[in-house]
Length: 391
Image 1 (spheres, rainbow, N blue to C red):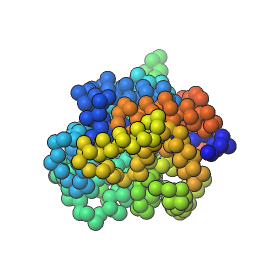
Image 2 (image 1 turned 45 degrees about the vertical axis):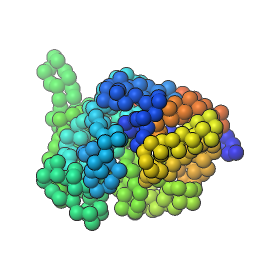
Image 3 (image 1 turned 60 degrees about the vertical axis):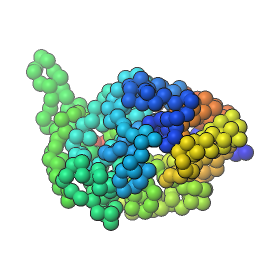
């Protein structure tokens, strides 16, 4: 068993409906009647915060969930429909104190100006705990909702390049107000210093944005930007544009290779000196003994009518066995993990109430929140404003 010599790792959970397994909503402990309530989401995030996790991500899309990559599957026996992830995060933020909130946003069909102020607002509402997971969509059914473009199947590289431009606009807009631009001097009647507001003048292939934002610079300066990556093109997006990337290696050797590729792309982009976290994604089914977990997985697969497979590896076993695996993968260069609970709230509670104490016993996880912001939790500095004049 790996010993306590391992450095503390970072842990996040990915929240999606009743859980990541498509039959999770039919589990005895599931609450399908509450999926579209604020109370449900607040309860899940509160549980994650009790486990001292770094952050939660909240899934989102621009079309109903589907087992097919290209469009609707027409199924009615699985959860379909979502609440808006950014709005969930904003609703939950005042009910939490420490945990980071990272909603998903599809950037292919949305405007960066709108998202920049939404995430900046989330950062204010949460006092510096906001992030965003930028998501690319090549689905024809999602494009059809907007009617502005078609997305050919061969356009992956173009879409990820566009996502890179999108993130650049987000970052420029967050910097378009310098720190201290709001004077708020009642006696002189000056609320804002116009000299500290800046046009960003971005010109790209898909959009041009003048700026400045309508929202002051967020508390973190730059909220956390994350992306999920499975191959070279999205690895490049992580390396060039993100603070953190989620990857899906199936073993330590593959994890080592993926991390090396991202680091090489990072160096090529001139970011070799910057911290870019790489988290491994795992879907987890956890129980006190591995036999129970295996039987639960078989039951869920039977209800779904097929064995579950997805983009990330599936771990079925005990919290102790998962702790072993996480520490093994950590040695391969991953700085943390985003765990996808197969069924909620069961697998989330297994993470917070059993996995976390086991990692803590090994000296591999925090005993308290040691920073006030999400960037602080991840050891990331508050960036200087690119438009502020050097003093």
